[in-house]
Length: 351
Ligand SMILES: Cc1ncc(COP(=O)(O)O)c(C=O)c1O
Figure 1: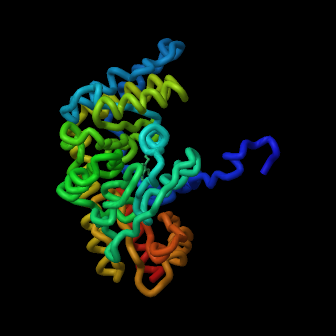
Figure 2: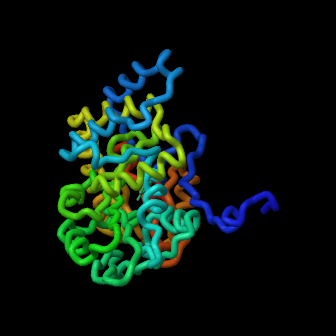
C-alpha cells in the first residue's frame, strides 16, 4: 500500500502465475508447458534474426506472422490479431469487447486471469457454476450478459465442450461477444475458428505457448470478424504499438510453417496423456476426461495439497489450487515419458 498508488492499483488482486523455480533436475509439471522443444525451424529463424536488424523496431503490424497464422487456419489476415502472449490478447479483449453494462459471464472454475482482468478494467462479472461433472452447460448462459468467455478445453479441468454446443450457444447469444479461449485446443479438440465467418460476435484466441512449445517468446493471437479485430488493434495502438519483437515474429512464423513438427509433438503429448491417465487411474486417482496437455486428478487416500507437497520433496512439481470445489485436485502437466514415469514412481512411494 502506498499513497502514491492510484485507486485502481489499491483495489487490484493480481494473477499469481505458476512457479518457475530455478532448481536443476526438477520434474516440472506445473505450468502446462510443452515438454518437447520448439520446431528446429523456429529456432533457426530466430537465430537468423539475431543481428544488426535488431537496431530497428519490429513491424508494428506483424504482417508476416498474421499471414502465416491466417494460412494455417485458412482465413484472411484481417481476421487475425497478434499480441504478446494470449494473456495480452485477452486483456485487450476484456477492455475492448467485453466491457459493457451487463455482467460478463464465465464459469466458476476457469482460467483465474479472467476475474483479474475484470478487476483491472472494472468489469462486472457473474460466475456460472460448472455442473457436478465439471462441464459447461450452455443453457446456464441464456441470461442477460455483456459478453461470455470460457476456455475450451477448460482450464484447469481439461474438459472439452463440443463444437456443436458452442454453435448452439452462438445461435442463442447474438447480442454480445462470445470468446472461446483455445489455449489447449490442439491437444484433442475441434477449433471454433471454423465458425468465425458465420458468427460475427465470435472471437477465438490461441497461443504458441502450448502446442507450439514457444511459451518463452510470448505470442498469442485472436481470430474473428474484422470488426472485432479492429477493436483489439485500437486498444493495442493505445497501449503498445510493438508488442511482438523481431525474434518472436520470426520464430512464431516459422513454427506455423512447420506443420509436421507441430502435428508430431501434439501427437506425442496426446499419447502420453492417455498413458498417464490410465496409470493414474490404476493408482486410484479420479480423473476428469482431458482434451488438454494436462490432467486434473483427485488423489486417493491423501489430501491433494499433501500429495503436492510430498511430490515436491521428490523433485516433482504439479499445480495445486486451494479454491472451493477443486481443493482436492492436482493439475498435472503432461511431461516426456521419462518425466511421467518419475511422477508415477514418486506417487507410488507417497500413496
Ligand atoms: C486458459 C488459458 N488461456 C490463456 C493462457 C495464456 O497463455 P499465453 O499468455 O502463454 O499465450 C493460459 C496459460 O496458461 C491458459 O491456461
